[in-house]
Image (cartoon, rainbow, N blue to C red; front, side, top):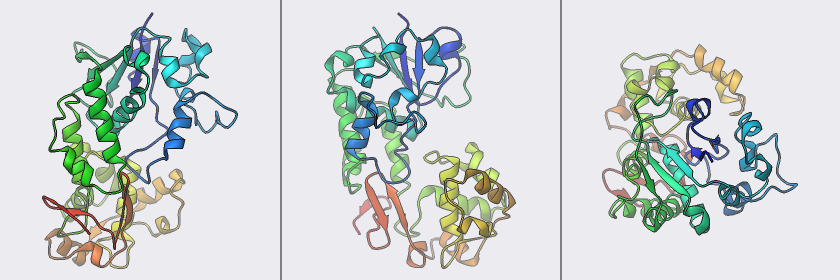
Length: 329
């Protein structure tokens, strides 16, 4: 039987060339932005389908996969838990690339599967050493596939618990350990840590990079949100970069001018109107923003901070910082 693929990014060739029976990108949770889902929410999503699950809300793992289910030989089992469903296959391949969102999804799933030895025996981890976004065909690319052993599971569980911890201490401690079982994880942890507020500016790496680009004359949001090589940071999605920009521009002492005023009142789920407002914006850096960029001012001393870093709630009176060591608030 062809394998089941669990992935952080769907490649058309997974199905088009008959490589897999089914490929699923379980995209319901975003482990980077906002508070972490509760253990009960995670268990319900991956567990067997119940009347409480909503097909429209895609609250069960099997709601992901779209039209692929019509061709899947295992579609009659889709109401099972994910672990039980995986046991219908001889091989389950995990394709999660170098992006932080993908690696966080990988450690979540490996931590989950650790309780199901029969499923673990079917898992193969693909070491996907590039970004799968935009990739449609494999060509000669064939990332190595390795067995998932207790070492991979233990590393994933430690990382997953660290990310969900109410302080960043566990993630910093994790960098002092051997993470070789998951070779793509260490760079991701470093990227995530760099998004903690800096000790001197109160801003993370993505916010500082936006200030740098705006100061250089990049006045349009398209460049800030979509040009990866220019932006250089890779933790957040385009919409999440927008939320960070909102904070830079609409606080009591803004570091950025020119962001459309309608964004102050638009719901964050109103993507259509938010997109139009971002396109209308013509950005420039304020004098205060220049001082922050020069590490002469601390943004957090003049503006509210209220966001999540994994399980850590960052606020002005509980602002964990780093540079280059972790600073306790």
